[in-house]
Image (cartoon, rainbow, N blue to C red):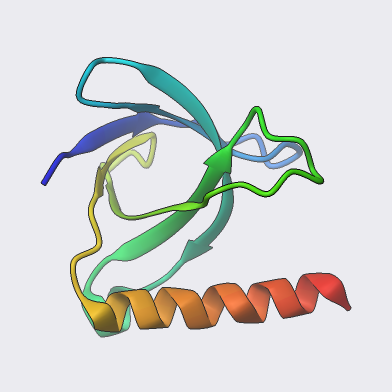
Length: 103
């Protein structure tokens, strides 16, 4: 399991962005599409990301991670999602989000 760290600032006029660093040290900027509160069910929160460089009409592969923020809420750790129950919950929330966006 690889662990990613991220920094983000809270400018709510813009989409929040996260820089992910992969195993080779390559940095990629992502925008946060959706955050999901999974504290009650799974004890952690989740985030759906898409590449910041993507065009609006372009089909992109979303990245989904569980995340834990530090106490200041300025940085956190992203972790791989490991259970089917977590994936099912994320997929359900995402589908609801997309249906709302289309209305």
